[in-house]
Length: 274
Image (cartoon, rainbow, N blue to C red; front, side, top):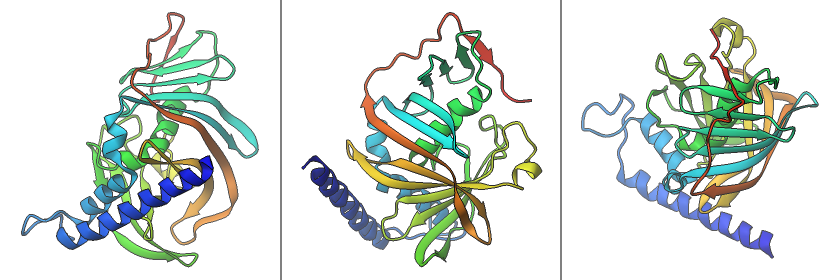
């Protein structure tokens, strides 16, 4: 019964969002040329704002914090197994692993506890996976830049897509970019291709782009959140291809009004990559 109620809630939410979007599309003019002319928003602005609205960014940000368990695997090897807690505006993040490690991002610095712990990609992990979880709510963050919105067909499905990049100085890896694909039937984020420039030059990163596929959306307090991710190789010509190279399952997703982001006394600082 609980699953049926959840399915009904999800269906009602998506139908409602689609109907709202259709009505708004009729009311709000858009322009290709960055909205220059009669004051209408550009297509790229309308594209990003519509995704955030469908996922219910407003309700997401009404809460102070969100928490979720994650089991992440790549190439058959466990990559992460623990719990993330984060401010919904991403200003603070905490990761607690099943084997006793704690990573804290305080809005500027990253700390790993205990001091003798080894976590090779601690800074990358604390910033990347929460971003993937919150991506549908961060598409209009300060520093985001959008390319032209295009309509494409992949595997018989219709998508809208646009390239997301960042202004210089945004985060550790401002050279990262994403190609964001939206399901035209639901206006939900379907997948995003991306490069990882953490610790490497952009030319090297662009030799091996990947993609994250968002599946099995759940409605948590009115907010659409994917609890199943799959990772693929990706190219501009092929889109996602081959078998999945990684997967993640999110569970125990919940909003919290308070959370503790205190840096443990026995923590060490993890510096940003040079």
